[in-house]
Image 1 (cartoon, rainbow, N blue to C red):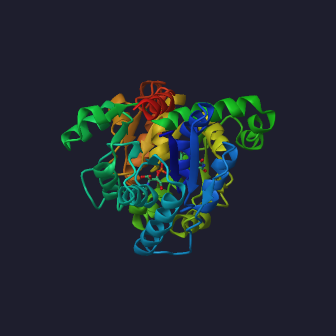
Image 2: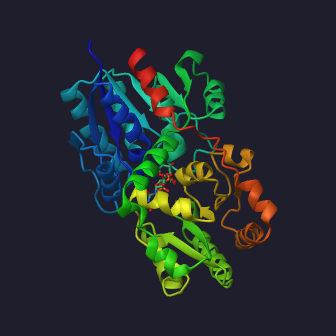
Length: 371
Ligand SMILES: CC(=O)N[C@@H]1[C@@H](OP(=O)(O)OP(=O)(O)OC[C@H]2O[C@@H](n3ccc(=O)[nH]c3=O)[C@H](O)[C@@H]2O)O[C@H](CO)[C@@H](O)[C@@H]1O
């Protein structure tokens, strides 16, 4: 039977990490159906537009404040219906979202094999991150092709008895996406000059890029983070740029405490290319995001991870990232160290990226087509 691959995606990170795979499959003239569940509508659309991908099927399942039960039931029904109609020979899912987990389950019910991009990330705790740890484990139990981004992720799969021949160490496709986005920025004068105003506003101050959106930091964590940022801002030699996640749990606190500070630029979630430009012009990054931890080392930007643990310890091992939690003293202390101690900065700013080399989608497509 001729290959017909259905790619499922629901959120911005899935779109970022799958667009290089979709583009490459299309370049190989493979029949591809892109099904967007649009679990997160706007941020997903921005990325797809940029990658010039129009979803063939758009389920648009986003409703305000929906529960996981409701979302999952709806996804199962709707993805099941799509699989019955499109009849793909294989389904590709990415990561650990409800879309990936339910997509794998629906494929199993339809006896369609599943490939898992970014397989083998584990925290070891089913409640942190919730529900992502269980989502990825369920996908793992169904998939027959596991694209592990790193050797560590591959060993996690082996320790769960995934057969060796089903594990492929590919690198993380986020590095492919980053390199493609960087090329787009460099080729387009409009994109390259996007932040000229911000550069002008902050002069030669060092820019700290901050992102914060994880559920585990809602409440006390975000308050500590804001307090730490206020202390950091007491220094005249820094400015902060912060794309604010739309979740009201973080948005309202950042807006009320930081919006009026002259050395803070609070902005809405940015197009991927614009975010990539911000990353490349920043001095260091404070984040609780997964994807940003994987991207920053490509540009040699030290990352202070505002979480207690990370399922991406490769950055810690490579020395390009450090865990500071949502701990006021650690955030301030480590930021000041990076600002004041050139050697510490240089040690973390090595541009070696342990997460990928930009060729992950090439390796994935090779396996998808010749399995
Ligand atoms: C609960 C939780 O935390 N779950 C994780 C979370 O993944 P994450 O932490 O990587 O998510 P974000 O930080 O939202 O995205 C990062 C990407 O977005 C780009 N970016 C960022 C700011 C901006 O203004 N414009 C952009 O373009 C940036 O370069 C990067 O590539 O959600 C995933 C799916 O829901 C889950 O699979 C994953 O476990």
